[in-house]
Image (cartoon, rainbow, N blue to C red; front, top):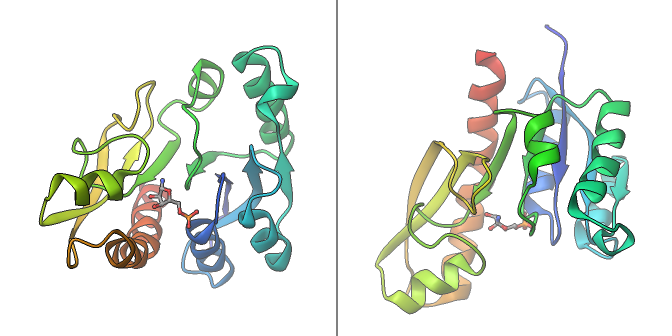
Length: 191
Ligand code: GRF
């Protein structure tokens, strides 16, 4: 088998997508290795998941840096020290800046819980339910300087269940875990 692609997953919260990707790598479903979990929130549950999986976490607090460029440079130094090739954003609640975009052109992927370009930004599931749409979904896309605006790689529709955020979120997460893995597989095998 060809050499495994080194990826870093970025997460700020629960990390269920991080765990799904890490497990897919460990199971050999993805020819990749999650070499780092990067977080801006050391208290995130994703960190516990990483510990259980034996994956190194690197936490960077934006407040510890004078500028966003300095914050991202510190992350970049860590990524380069581990020879990371792809950045996978899985619930990373910050806009990626110039420093990382320039270091990883077309090599940063994000997952978003709506059918973009509808409902970009925070609380996308709540936005969709509040709007009264009957179908929402999941988008995996390449990251550019905008908020959830980069080229779309994959989408899957999910029906809004009983106008209920929690039930719909559960259905969305289940789809996310499969769609992210499949999309990464296509990306990594076409390089
Ligand atoms: C997911 O819904 C993802 O689409 C969005 O943030 C959420 C992260 O969930 N960007 P988790 O932390 O992976 O459980």
